[in-house]
Amino acid sequence: MKKVLVIISLIFLITGCTNVNNLTYDEIIQNFGTNSSRTNTYRTGYRYYLPRGMQVNSSTLFNEILEDGKNTYYLYVDAVSYINQVNYEYEVNSDSLYSSAITNGDKFGYVEINLQENDKYLVEIMYNYAKIEVIVDEADINEVMLSAISILKSIVYNNSVITNLLEDNVLNFAEEEFNIFNDVNNDSDYIEVDTDDFNPVEEEIPDTDLLN
Image 1: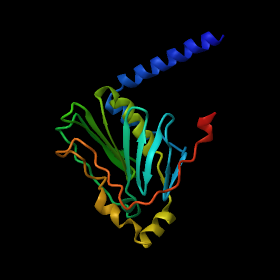
Image 2: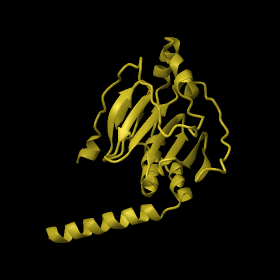
Image 3: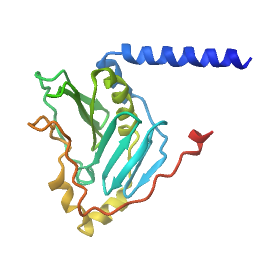
Image 4: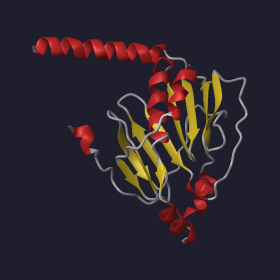
């Protein structure tokens, strides 16, 4: 019986992986249209869902570095733009491998994939006033996109906490350090993260559902 279960599990994993790799980028971003009500990671002013197999490498105020065992994800949360409800219209970049605006109700964003000089690809996904950037091999783009989308669409903000931070003048750096509405298509092959002068926030709270 155990051998049968193992064989079935292997078939499921192999088939699932094949299906993911066969999806088009347009099909992948359709996942923004599905609802996400689960969160298992709690931060100052927001919370989100961290997919199984991923972990937090480091965490500062509104910046996270996440890992899945192979790739590193840089998450930026723009609380200033969120609380001010800044609107942004993305212009498709015809020079990119893939470029698309995202609209889902009152939420918006974009996906852009660009080839880097080291034959890797920079995947940028902005949605719901947060952004994830990852530099990956071409073969990993689909899986990375799905993980990033799962995180971004799950983000829930705490208005009162963010408002208090703004009143305390804590978020002045947010408008200067990083602009989630701008792409990172510059001369550098590396994603730059400035963690100076940031204060640590709460540790990740495990999702008991995922531990079972």
